[in-house]
Image (tube, rainbow, N blue to C red; front, side, top):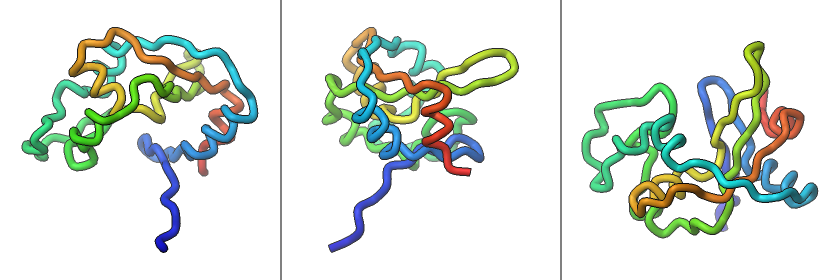
Length: 132
């Protein structure tokens, strides 16, 4: 039997352990927030992803590229399961980063949903999920 795959999110040189984030959320429950689908679609350029898997020639600076995207999987994604948003600290203030739920965001975009449920990690929790 193959070893289970760890779910990771890579942003530039940063790697976030999504499985660890899920454990944190299990140990420290919190209220679910609603997050704007349109905002994440714009930030991650999800409208450029093609369901047929064609046009692998472009690579976004931020978000998934066509080679790492599976539209069939996205259209089966559970839109009731909250996405996970990491909170990062910068000199200009906190910033949010979607680390789990890109396929759910794509499905929500296709179906015209305005929001999805989300859990937001604290800055400290986000730091605990980052691998250095």
